[in-house]
Amino acid sequence: MAPGRSVGKDDVDSIDQKCTHLESASQPIEIGTFRVLGLDPEDAEFYSNFPEGRRKKVFRKVDVRLIPMLAALYLICHIDRANIGNAKIEGMVEDLGMTGVQYNTVLSICEYFPESFALAGFFPGAIYLCSYWYMPKDLSTRISYFYCASALSGAFSGLLAAAIAQMDGVGGLEGWRWIFIIEGLATVALGIACFFLLIDTPALSMRWLEPEEIRYLELSMFIKQGGKFREESGVRWRDLKMVLMNWRVYVQSYFLLCQSALSYGTKFTLPTITKAMGFSTTDAQLTSAPPYVAGAVSAIVFARLSDRFFWRMPFVAISLMIVTIAYAILLSLQGALEAKRGLAYFSVVFAVVGIYPIQAAAASWNANNIAPASRRAVGIALMNCVGNVGGIVGSFMYLESEKPKYYTGFGLSLAFGGTGIIVALLLEWSYRVANARKAKISEEARAKYTEEELFDMGDKSPLFKHVL
Image 1 (tube, rainbow, N blue to C red):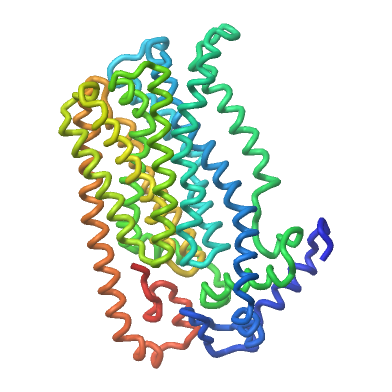
Image 2 (tube, rainbow, N blue to C red; image 1 turned 30 degrees about the vertical axis):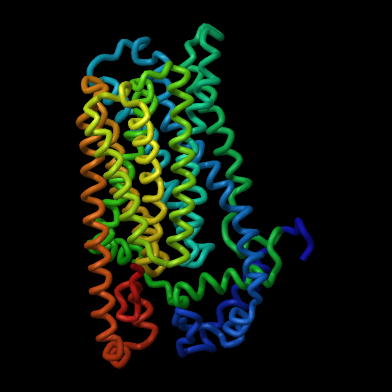
């Protein structure tokens, strides 16, 4: 197919016809660990015999087109959330005459009314988009690639703020005002660009994918869903009801709530904490960068290990354990941040190393345990909705009146880490029990239900095995 050729309806229909021959296949087919209903034998043979080298090439193409754009969007999204912490130590609080908890109140108002309503769909949408293109065992690594941009935003935000703050007085504006102006303009520009650069579906990617590569990706999605089923009226309401009644989704959401509280509390307060260690204003901005670089590295390393072993729980629990240890040390310093600067700074870096792997592991764990795709989309959105409540907590954790001891901030962070570990262990135990119970009734279920009915149950099916 010639590069740059426009995609027509006939092209899309042709691909769909090649990939889905539901009428010709009534029996489930085993493809790896998946049981697929409605897969044509010809398509099954094509998928199974697709060379490993070409598979890697296809996903490298997808990685290049999808991940950098998501990372850039996530980077600028979190720079906009973190820059108020940078503006604070550049004199914003004094210039605006804020006292007491007014700064914390402003954080909540600005963060959770205009901003969060506008950005609420981004992270669940990004995860759902990744789950559309990638197989379950590859999901955590891909999420970590763009999510580590959140960690890097903390590093980049501090460096960028230190540079922009040098514009203090230009145009009669303070340096902290220029931080908001310049970073805000970058956000608008990138938001416009994503309409043209963000990829959608394999069937609409004929300009950069070969027909056989598109067929392979379409079949991958078909296979991991277990096949395609008839569209029923009201299916969205049914999926919403099933997700709302799934208690494990709320438990999974607790990990995101912990991570949000820890992440936002750190982003809003880290420059102030480093300044309390005795650093100058500029040095406080600069020394806030290394912890986030370490957090980005840990997010990728943990995610790759999680995908390699296809085991989510340990990488949630270990991350929370690191957080618990780090904040226990900070709390034990009792405000002696400047006197014990080395230990305090190490603890901050260690805390951030634990914070950033949580979301990729927890989000992929949640996505891997919800089926079919329509229900998964609702589950991801619900997890994000509940988890974002942690951001409100993070806005009020670090009280100006408690500086530099921050008993509330360090104490709550310690509590989130400790309780998160317990929840992770209990959740995996519940999945093990559910898998054992399903294994006992799977043969009975096959006799009672048709294969299509079993697949249509999604994660409630006795044939569905939970990811631990």
